[in-house]
Length: 154
Image 1 (tube, rainbow, N blue to C red):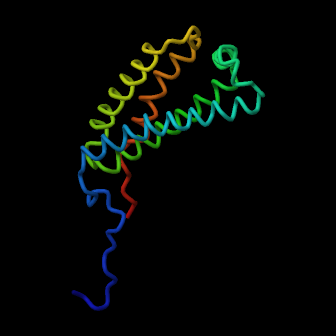
Image 2 (spheres, rainbow, N blue to C red; image 1 turned 30 degrees about the vertical axis):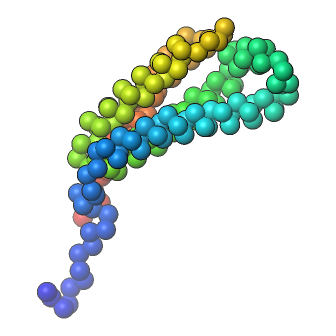
Image 3 (spheres, rainbow, N blue to C red; image 1 turned 90 degrees about the horizontal axis):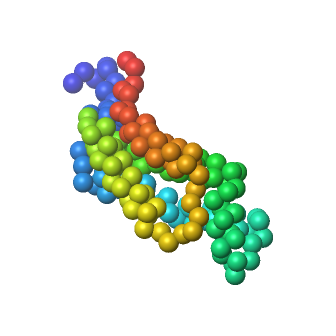
């Protein structure tokens, strides 16, 4: 050891991060599904308060949700942000194989979304453009969030 040299810093080295694929998939799914459901419920309640809907008229409120474009755009932005965060969570726990496990999270998340969409007993459905954007942006945001961390320049 040279007493006249500063020690090498390896605090932010992406190669030193532990490889935890099961934890990455479980945390990614909990963020992309559970956190997204919680955020959507909060968004719907806030929207109902802003619009002033009486909760006795749930049928008209459901129709309003599926036709209100500002609500759908805010929902898309929030959903994409949460899925991006899910990708970050997956990428941090799987250094070197970020995309492989992000794709696993994407497939399970999309399967869960499709299950929720087709199992509902709603008389109203979202427009086709909204569904297509949702199913395109969800995996894109997860994969973009999971991109490998870049090492600092020397």
